[in-house]
Structures are given as C-alpha cells and as structure tokens.
Image (tube, one colour):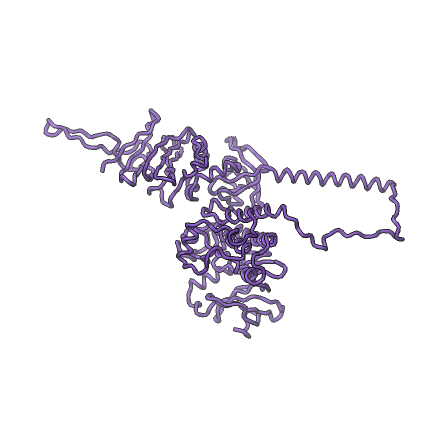
Length: 579
C-alpha cells in the first residue's frame, strides 16, 4: 500500500492496523495536506455486510462537523478497495496518554479534557447518532490537550430511517466499557453512551480499568450487569468524593438513574470545578504600563470631558450590572424535568405544529414563559429552552419540578414501566406512594416493573376503559423486591384513590376488552336447564364483558381471575375462572 495513490493522496506510512483494516498517512499531491486513510482489510472486501458497515461509518462522519470529532474528507470505493479519507491528527490515543504519560490525570485537567469529549458526544446525540464504542483508545489527544473522537465504526443512527446493520440482541462494543443494556443485547439509547463515558472518566482519574482484564468475557458480563460499579477511590486515593459521585451516577445500572444527556453530565462536572482555583495564563494577566512622559505622574484634570466620561462610565456600568442581574435570575429561573416518555417540543401552542426536538423522560428544560391554549381548551403551555438550546412549547402537565420528578422516577424499576405509564397516571402513582409513605427509606423496595410485551400478553401494566366512559384507565402491579408480596392498583380517569388488592405471590395482568373482542368469561352466573322434566343441570355461564376488565394470573396457584368494575356500586367484583 505504501507508495500507492488513493484519490490524489500518496500513501506515505502505516499509522495503525487492526482486524477491520489499516490506517495510513496520506499526503495530497497538490495541496500537501496530510490525511489519515483507513483501508478496509482485503480479506473482508467480499463481505457485503462488512462493506455496508464500513460505508456507514463514512456516512455518519459526513453528518458530523465538530471541533472534537475528526473531519471526513472523502469516501472512495474502487476496484482496489474501500477507503475512508479523514483528518489526520498528530498525537496519541487517550489510552496511551494515560498509560505512558500521566497515569491518573489530575482532576482539573481531566475535567477540562472530558468536557470536550462530552460536548462532542452530545453533539453526535443531537444528530441522533449513538457511538456504542466509547473508550479511551477511540480518542486522540495532542500536546495542547486538544482531543478528538477518531472511530465511529459501530456507531448507529437512531433517526428511524437507517438500515439495521446489527441483529437484534447482538452485543456490540468493547466489553470493559459496555453498559448493562449492551451486555444484555437490548435496544440502546444515548444513556448507554453515558455509561461508557462514565467508565472512560473512571480510567482517566484512576489510571486503571474498573475490572481485571484477565477475567473471562462471561465474568465481565456478570460484573457489569449484577455488581455495583467499583468506587474510583478504591483504585486511586486522589479521586475526590464529588468526582466519585459523578462517576457512580453516570454508571448506574438503570438508565433512568444516570445522567439523561451529555449536557447534564457536563453540568455535574462543572459543579465540581466551580470552587477550584484556576491558574491564569501569563498572557491574560493585567499588564501595567507607565503612561508618564517624563517619569512623573500627571495630576488628573477635572474638566467637562472628565465628568462626561465619568457619567458615561457610571451609565455603562449600571447597564451591564442590570444585564448581569438579569442573567443571574435567569439562571435561577424555573427548571423542570420532562415526565412524558417522549415529549415533542412544539414550535407553536398546539400539538399539530412542527416539533423541533423530542425530549426524553427526565430531561431538564428551563421555563421562560407561560401561556393558555388560544383555542379555549384550558390547556396551559410552557415556553421552554432545552439542554440543546432549542426553544418551544410543551404542555405544563408534562413537566414537573425536581423533587416531584425524582419521586416519580424512583417508582419505576425499568424504562419500559415509565414508557407504558401515561403522565396523568404517573402523577396518581406518586400521590399513592406519598399517601402511603412509600417514599420512606424503609419502604423503597416497592417498584413498578414492565415487560417488553404486546397488549394481548400478560404484563405488569394494563390500560383499558374499565368504567366505560371512553377514557383510558390504568392498572398496574407493584412488586416488593424484599419479599413475594404484590399489589394490584386500579386507577380510574376520575383521579380518585385507586382500588387496591394485596397478594402474597407473583401476579401478572392483561386487559380484557368488551364484547366479542375480549372473548367470553365466567362472571358468577349459571345456566340452568331441566333434564327429563324433573332434574335440573347447572353449568357455568360464559359471557362477553359489557365493558373492559382485567384478567389476572396467579403464578404460584396457576389461577386466572377476572376483575370487573360494577358500575352501579362502583366496586370491583372478581371471578376466579374454572379450570
């Protein structure tokens, strides 16, 4: 390869090589510009899926223009092979930098470097791109502490239009830096990258990996999924308690417990560095010059010009002081969390207007205004600014203050549970937990969990019209992780206290829809007919439901029970189904 030419670039030397291919230094024949040229391994060129993945990396790089991400110059496919031509950065990988140059990176410098990494990854997330293989060896750093992301080989676009290049359930990434969700082969979102960033930060400030490299892949999987993430201070005593807290949150097992975005991660790091004394470069320090012509100080002249300039100075100072005060109160203004699963940020005060962004559950927004629905429907709208700087409108009922959000968030054991719970029932669940002191530390084990199943399968959440008023109601199973006890809660749309049933075994539920759609069920009634004109035969009567109900399955006793709201008495009747 050395001495050949690719698209006007003369191949000068080999930089690196791996299983997927080699990277060469190329020099443009006319522009004399250096470039890194990634050459796909010749042994893989006859594999369409590998070529598609290689091409996908180039497509993704072409969408990214950020100072901390290498720039794509060109992509070439010809009879000789496939090549990605990109910006050449002279330096060493962050992994090499830690291993051979610094060891544990001093905390202030680590924060400075890592904020650039977060900015770059956050930018990729804003373009709906997941990296999926964040680790120190995929970053390159130079002597000026400038850092760039090098490799997007297994990155994935989550815009819903890209081809699927990875089988569902297939693990991708580098094991040591995988999130629990990657290890399980689950569907990933930006919070998986947040986890990998947390592991990267761990290595930066401790100089070590969190797990023993000699362990088998199976053992590593088990540690990542089941064991608490290691405390950085156990590996290097110089890590501050605040930094330990940041890393622990970033590497939480549950995505809901992590930072929900790179911006939120950055703010936490800035909170650590706020109180630090920063070294001011010499060039930025104030310089004092002797303005006297003859070495003697001149007396000030209090003439009209002096007074005019003084007044202008006072007015200017007052103006900027007012701005500073305004910014101070703006920064202290109303910040709230999104409690809808996927909340659209609308350009206008109606849900049919264009959405500029999709906000995830838990994301923070800053409230800058409030309006009432101009269509007279009584809906209150908030004008907000997202973490990515986009402004727009969202319904006020779909956001909550920090304490309320934290309480709501603590109810759900996994993301599927919150995703299947509508906002109004999230609030009702919070009210139930508060009324029954379930937010108390002694009772934190009560959680709502949900399975990734269809509506017609058993789950721990059921949504249907239980009171027959054409408004969706909500039922769920709370499970106590300390024992086998379970609670069935049935919430109606009227916001009243839920109907509650206790069980000492695991139960699952699913909705039964009214009429023929839901099938016929035993509801406590019997068919009676005479036999031979004298004796009677009594049999169970199976009926269609007049309105939606719930089918509950008891796992230990293997029994099915129909729960049905008696509309006249406003009570729940239940009927165990015959074997």
